[in-house]
Image 1: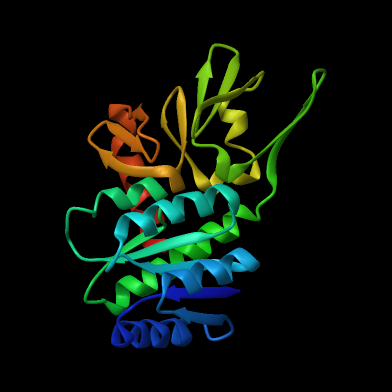
Image 2: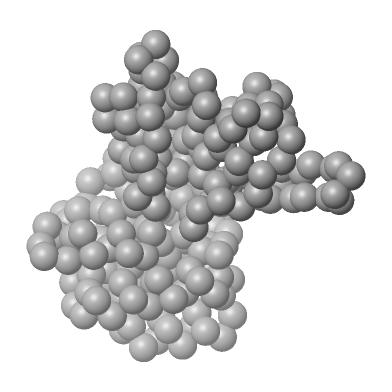
Length: 233
């Protein structure tokens, strides 16, 4: 796997590269200290799976570039390096895997690597496939944000909204091999754990801003399962 680091500060780049080499010794590592060189290299052949990008200079240019890059190459995972400033909330426009604060914390760098690798592994999982009289319907598990039980139908939702409605019980959906990634938080809803942005009391907020209810009877189980998921990242 190829990993790239765009960082102006040589000391930070050196520290980060050493952490990556210690935890991912069999990966190819490339460093850039100019955004033009990074863009040129990536545009030639985007074989990079994980990119660490500094927001030290020209943060909005880097954020916008990252957003466009993810639209073209869905297989790349972005990790930003930043300080707490007015741009800290802008980074989420690019849907990063992780945001690292400077100065770097070794454990946080490890967590960012683990999360990026986990998402990349999930993207290789088989898709959810339904075969019926209408034909064959396929959608990658990672593209499913949540499912909703609506009488005898199951509504499947992605980042932009409803993707497909099929004849299937929510209990049958959860019996598929993707069950480890989905959690039933309500009698009518099952959520993909990787797309949760935050968990509040009796409500889940997804990365696309959608909100799902949590049944009072399922709150403790939902909270516990999500905590376990985060610890395994």
